[in-house]
Image 1 (cartoon, one colour):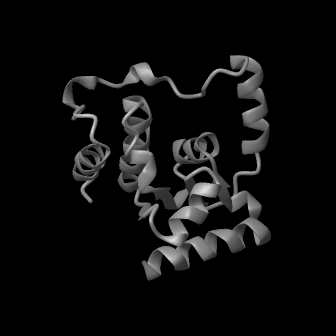
Image 2 (cartoon, one colour):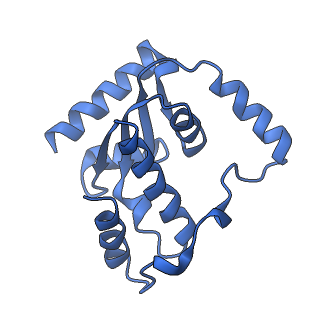
Amino acid sequence: MAREVEILQKFMRMIDTHPDQAQYGYFHVQKANERGAIDSLLVTDELFRSAHSIVQRKKYVQLVEDVRDQGGKVYVFSSLHVSGTQLQQVSGVAAILRFPLPELAEMEEEEENLSHGSSAYDGDAYDDSETNDSGDPNELMAFDMVNMGL
């Protein structure tokens, strides 16, 4: 838990001191991931428990795998700890970047204009054949975390 608290504090300081290197929200974090810019990914365990949205769980599992494949560190925060609650307040996903990406704000506006409010994520890109759909949030999270190597 101490590591998670420390990295969350670092992220919060980065928002104030170097905002182009501290991103939060799925859109910004995913765009930073596409550029190989993520040094540290912060994500709450709650995002892996969605019993209602297999697509949501899978997009976060994929994000974690991509960040690890690119040499980034991944920190999974417990929603039962104060640090996880704080991270959940800023969307549940955040990243400290290796280098600044000031153009992300402009890209979000362009994406919204192009998609007319639809999600930047295409959930059809996943194959549901290898999922655990028991509906129990704890089993779903455990299944996803095993697949992430946690």
